[in-house]
Image (cartoon, rainbow, N blue to C red; front, side, top):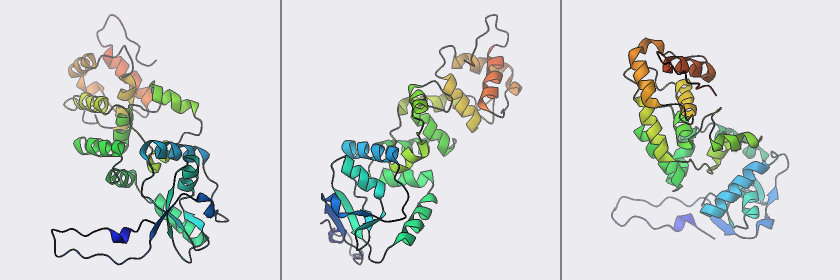
Length: 272
């Protein structure tokens, strides 16, 4: 048994008061004692596999599942099933009197969490990829949070990266699910910062440089061997009013190609 209430108080303060013990946290390797509560949602097998892999790599975090006095799982069935697959122990808290109503309430409350809430939570738990993302977001707060995730993943919907290709092969891939489960890894954070800096170079010529459509389009162009960012900066400096936000990335890429090829004898195809 792991009792959180037994954690020592800080020695350097006379004003810190120990909180009242409410529910004890237990630890067990005997996962057969737990039961699925009737009426709960069907587990997502992809989610379980990703959580199990995270447990194998990072170990089991102190994120207890909630059960009632009948050992029926109120919250954390995916964590429990992942622990079984990873041959791990599990932390749990017994909430007397909880039933299916509390299951629905907990699920509803979890949906109100933002991606930033999940990032802060996992970063505070010490998960490296979320710590790096938090640092990146702090340094690049002129970009949207979703674009920061895309930059740090080195990918964008419609991109040519190996990450995107793998994403297409997995028809059940759910990026939100991965991010919220704590298994998001990011990719090359140095490359992400380099890309953010390059896109920011356009700010003197284009006020909407951090628009999500534009950012997503440039991420795909950074994978195009024909694209030279310095050349694009030069061409946009010649005709800065030509660049506007389009309805989608395909239209945006067509416009960028037109600007890129301005006064060029050898036209470059940037759309494919």
